[in-house]
Length: 147
Image (cartoon, rainbow, N blue to C red; front, side, top):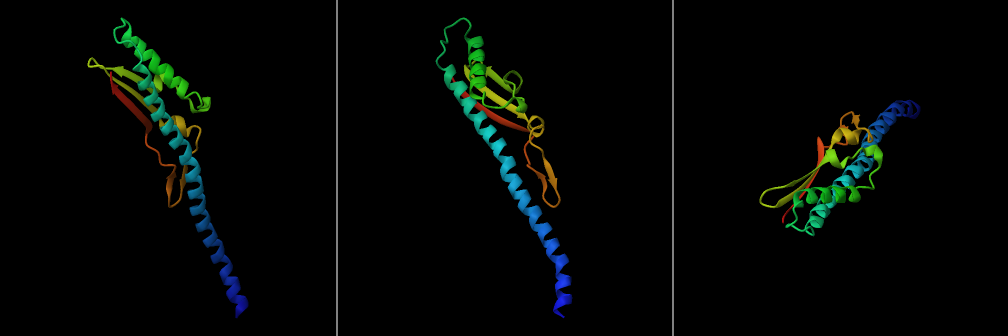
């Protein structure tokens, strides 16, 4: 009786292994694949804040003040995000915007499309779990300051 019971259990163990492996793999891949977007988002927040802070040092009485603010903010963003590899295709001119309102409210925004990230980081569609990693359509960061 033991021999027949053992043979019946071999298939069940294989099915259990497959179910546990899918869950384990999803968790492991999730940890790895969410790490890069979180690092990027934190870097975007830090870079936009630093760009706004550095613009405070500019002379508001200058005739080219608006252009100087725009140039400095984009230069600081480029410096702060220089660590990002070229494969991520971050472009300061297209992914970031600097606006200075008539009331001297400086706003620096970064809007990085999900499509650029998924070209480097593959998105897996796991059965029963869905898309890993589940990311918003774009990674966004914004900092503003009244000058």
